Length: 160
Image (cartoon, rainbow, N blue to C red; front, side, top):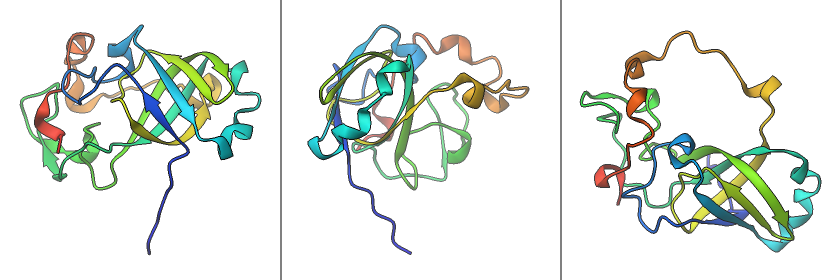
């Protein structure tokens, strides 16, 4: 079975390389980016401006070769790739919840970003707390490590 996706746009951010990118949108608080949607998909942006936050799904275009066990940014131990949010994965798909500041024609102005410049956009979905907020009772290997998140930044370990 072959599955293919085509980008619907491109993400423009201040991060020119993966090194130094915040590890999650909460680590990129206040960082602005512009999501450019390709002309043939602009009609699909109708009514999106009514949402304060959106999910961006994108292709980790600069991710290197994946490994099923890796050492993530917030730990010095190896973990299974599916127990991490590392960009080097069998299907290098990224997911970020960002704040939608405004929509102008084919551009979404967003904030709280953790995405490298020129990243291909695969999809956009509205963030809806009643659907998306879940109370986590276990955080696995991340227990006690999240206090480092705001200051932590990506290095070269998952890049091409």
